[in-house]
Length: 249
Image (cartoon, rainbow, N blue to C red; front, side):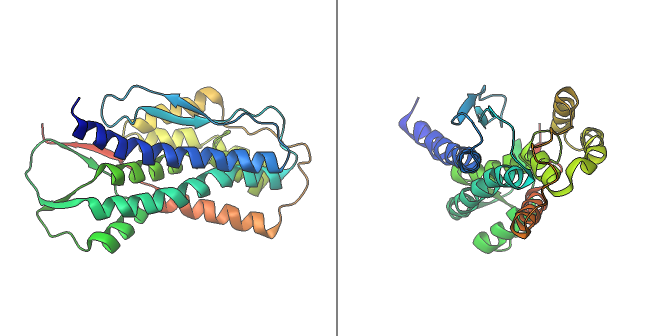
């Protein structure tokens, strides 16, 4: 492997692992603050192919005790995505500043979906891209884009995903009927990107119901409601229906 290739790999992997690590440390810190027994974060390795596989499935922490109440559930669910986004956004901005605007060649390539947040940041950093030109993302920019995409996936409101924690904290067991419909919504979304089929199968296999915290009747504070609204807004800003599309070939 050439040193230049190794450097490009590091410029992608170091920012991405930093985003994922901060995400999980957000969960870990919130859990420890509420005296929920959890393990430290563990990164899950994954094959780096086929492209655009990032070589990791993220990181996990294992819960060893139940949540005390819905306030602690909100803190733990929201802390990861919000903390990760606070790293992913400046990473993406820095990466966009290193990216190049090139004339379109019409050859084989990978087109990334553009979320609302990505469009806003891209316009702020690069300005309007002329017709007939494309943005060739720097590895740092791809790491930031992927970090926000993974954040969005974690915010899907079902089961024990971060979004499931947040939705249960906001609405309690009333949300269970809505959560059951999420896998079927993902199946419909699979018509745009086949990866949604995998997420639908994942949720159908693991289930969409969320376990109750010990003191389920304790109401949320206004601050926790605000965290929930911020998390929902982050999901909308990071959402892209068709994240990966092959061009040419």
